[in-house]
Amino acid sequence: MKKISFIFLICSLIITGCAQNSDYVVTIKTSYGDMVAILYDETPKHKENFIKLAEEHFFDSTMFHRVIEGFMIQGGDPDSKNAQPGQPLGRGGPGYTIDAEFNPKFFHERGALSAARLGDQQNPTKASSGSQFYIVQGTVMSEGELKIDQMKFNQAMQQFFQDSVNRPAYDSIVALYQSGNMKGYQDYIVRLKPRVEKATGINTEKTVAPEILKAYTTVGGAPNLDGEYTVFGKVIKGLEVVDKIAAVPKAPGDRPIQDIRMTVTVEKMPKAQIEKLYGYKYPQK
Image (cartoon, rainbow, N blue to C red; front, side, top):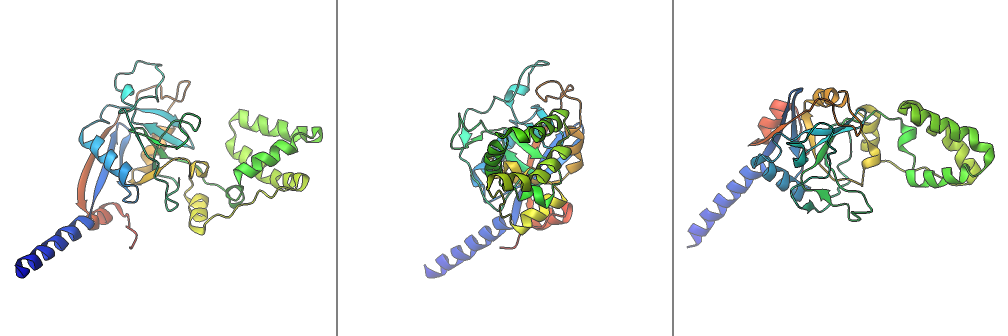
């Protein structure tokens, strides 16, 4: 009996080891090319749900219905499958949400695969949409931009602009934002920061982890989304496809004028093969 139990234990360990040495690869096919992604084990509810929906072909024929260049591309709304031109999209789903799974290891760097959700007023727990997701394109940011605590800075700005002497600065910010010159807008904010802090006495600096600072100042991303939306995967091939989709002409509401539909598949393969095929390196545990 002991011998049989020992053999069973060895078999169990072998099976467990094989499971740990393999992973799922997600392929999102579009007319602009394919994107390949992996899903994080540390966000198990999101990973399991995405795999389930892909295997059920839930995503097939859905659109990337909201695209913003320099920010992200969003899809996965089942209402988009048969949507008429101009129809507002972004409210559909499978009929459930997923609990938020925030993890400080994962942030909104370029290529991050994240879950969309309803706003805080309707959704105070920040639960994720059951199917809608977005892929970050983002922009490269300066160290100065990244070290601004946005909540404190907004508080300081409100106080700063109560003084009529600072009205020209307010007008400049509004003009840059309305013109769509986001780079100029961000640069102006960074230059204005010392003046705002001096006038209000509010320190708006925050500490940023070195690896996050490096990512956002080199490959870029959307740091304003960190801690607000669950990052559950990463595109490891096909980032140029994200750029192409983000750049298409859009109608009001950021919906592409020409429909961009997707087909999503998942395939399980050895991690060593994934690393060889796509150049992705799994972190050492």
